Image (tube, rainbow, N blue to C red; front, top):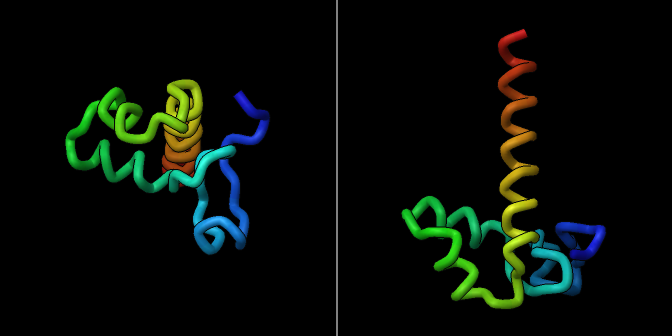
Length: 74
């Protein structure tokens, strides 16, 4: 997996955050999960995203949320 997980490039989808090395917006993963889709369904729909990339984004989002909650309750 590339060292950089997410790219933001004004030349790719107007700077929308995408999985590095793809043109798949990170928000699409979140939308799939919100709709009740399994991770495997997302990966089938977007084969340019690896399982490792998707899991790493979810882990990063979880860590960010946990940090925010910890800060708010401190």
